[in-house]
Image (cartoon, rainbow, N blue to C red; front, top):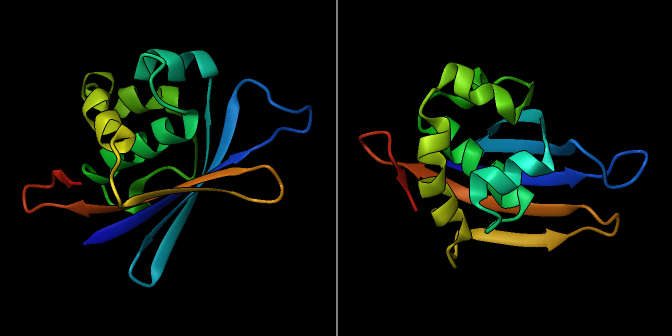
Length: 134
């Protein structure tokens, strides 16, 4: 099944801050799940070696999660730092997902809204083995 992942960076009341805040919507067919996710900028830099935007890092994290669980099983509100508690391989596996997100894949699109929020979206398809197919 194909899932569409939309990541929206949300500005904080005080402006750009730490932790960064995101709203993520995962859509599969006619159903969707929504998630409020936070992540420290330093963690993003460490997880992506400074090569990807925070939105792309969150998108990669959701691709990782969707390969392991249904969208309904993903917490509604969490910080990216909790993912390794549930999936110890997260930090080791994320670079592979980040490479997919960072590639010029036609399935990823990026836009900005008039509120200055960044949106990144991807169609994520699981293979028969549960692995992502670009």
